[in-house]
Length: 146
Image (cartoon, rainbow, N blue to C red; front, side, top):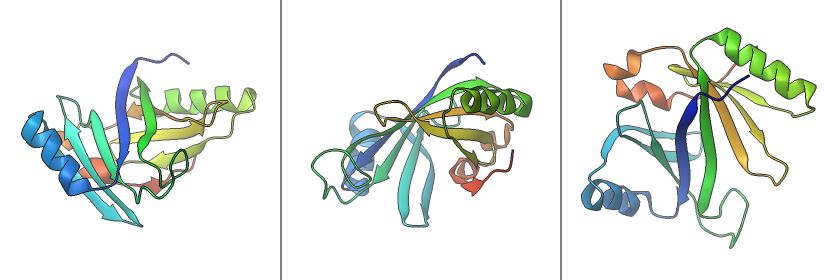
């Protein structure tokens, strides 16, 4: 398994509308998709890839750490463009004793897992260019069988 590039970063924020205005208005980033389902509200921004940054709304009730705290949600690393590469990465993680959660994001297929300090990481493969004509497809979240 080899990491190809940094894929994207997801930040947790307490006011999604306010943060979206900051990233679009102040920083000039473009919104490519939104997600509002299963208790999550997210906005996805692109700097040329399907998404380079995503913001996830949380309550901010926890001062540090936890699902409701502001800050980093996860960092994603692109490892290629084939399911074989993702299957190989899963076998690699399994052999190292690292539990992962396979997830289908339609245009990407992913493995989510934690590093030794509990930071969530994502390894993914790009499997479709459909996001170019239908950007909202990047906001798909379904279980993935590997």
